[in-house]
Image (cartoon, rainbow, N blue to C red):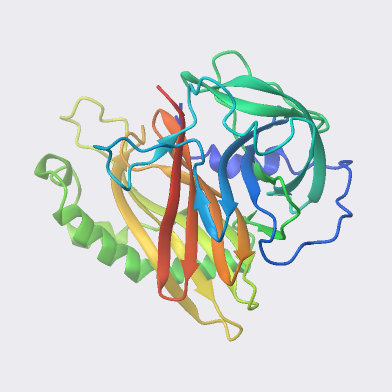
Amino acid sequence: MLKTLITLSLLAAMFSGVSGIKQADAPVKAGSDNPFIVGILRPDGVIVPFARYANRRWSNPWHSPQPDAQPDEPDAIADLPKPWYELLVKPTAEWYLSLSTGDASTVRTSKSIQVCSHCQQVWGLLSDYHNPKQPNKDECVHNFGIALSENKKARAMTLLTSASPDWKQLITFLAPEFERAESVGLAGTVSQYSAQLPPAEERARVALSMLNLYRSQLADGKLIFYFEASKEYPKPRAVNDAGCNNISLLGGWIVRDSKGNLTLLTSEFSPTDCDMKEGGLALPFAILHLDGKTFAIVEEDSYEGEGYTILEIRKAGVRRILETFAGSC
């Protein structure tokens, strides 16, 4: 389960020593002539496939919507009776990795196995990823990259630290946007929650914190950032869990051009507290350029589960293309 706000910030440090993996030497294929599958790479070396790109579109190939199903209802890979990908990729094949460390490397898979994802099971391919780290009993793994069944050029999202000049610049840029989003967001929350927060004048004096900041490069040379910023407010002593601060959380995407100008593409405000039962955090793994479009591969984590999302990055904003649930409790 997601118990703290610092979990995601530790991921880059946990795997910053990744080395010694066989380097990819196959030529990069242009366009999307060959359909391919994308999967999440776990630290135990298992690749969990979750979507396919073919004929210029993303899909969950195993999904057959029921007549009464909502058209935008996400599909799930949890507890499927058999590996959905077995007719699309060989169990023994080469996969191309894009890791948060920036390494471009390959691994070879050997067989399909079931692995734990929160309280459920998902199918994955066991690989020869070097130095795999097995999860502790009853512990959720923290994924740290993507794997592609074809050699498509993926740009990894790099986790930045407070030492980066981008960190300070984006906090300054986000300050007025955060106040606006918080004011609008709190107006739509239940009064019981908003009543626990200090008035707007006091909230404005609370320092804005950057929880996570990721950066990558687009095909046109612009830089793209994914951010999660927050403010914390102590709860009144009268409430039951007074030691668990209330949190205003804002996450979204920003583009910076060659002149240093920043543009906010999209943002989402979530009122929550230290347990993070509302809202959630994300892991943006990589940027893919396919058929003239730009996509981001993102893991979205909730209080008791996770899902994998394909986003399309556009000049005018960010569009959700495909959502796939993994395990939950």
